[in-house]
Length: 282
Image (cartoon, rainbow, N blue to C red; front, side, top):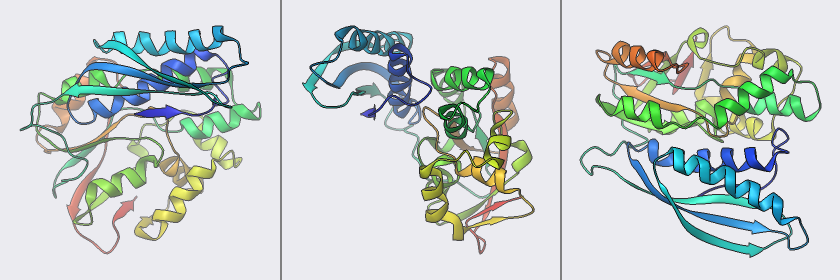
């Protein structure tokens, strides 16, 4: 189950709140190479609040479940002081082709399927410093299912895959490496929202991003990388893209298919034999 236990600052609209929460929950199935078949609503809602708000949240979530080709089979609700909403999602996957969130191999190419910077943009929005078009782009990204990217990847050999969420790109990448190899990232190739670095330079940062830095910082080597770009790489995402480690001979074909579908995917780095640092950003 995945939940968003508060209205993020860009989601005063309960309908969008429901869409983002559902997209975030469904992503776990796509990150394993699975197909979503059903979902259950999990809801906490204050008794004194307008039930029309709850109706809009559930409508947004249901539309994303339907888009995934799945069935919303009911759910559970309780009275609570705060709004909480998420989905318990069930999917099917070939047991011989389950994508694990570890298993990168030296020589692999790393592909990221969505832009980074959601947390930074939303922080800027909360204090009314974000451009409206940036907020709209971030919301569009968060409500866009990883279904298309996952479907393309099923045609190829995937060695490791995860969806980039609250731990940001770097911590999720560290999990994929499992201490057995090193990842070399090319910062210039990483897809990110146009103004994410500019907002980071103004210190519109999240507490979770700083926790990510504190957790992983001594295992990452930054080579002539700006502070702002570092923050983008540590930035927590909501309903982020897939980060996948694939055979180098298939990376360009995968990228070509994703670009043909309009995805902002890029090859962001490669896997090497284990070096002193776990991740090198250059």
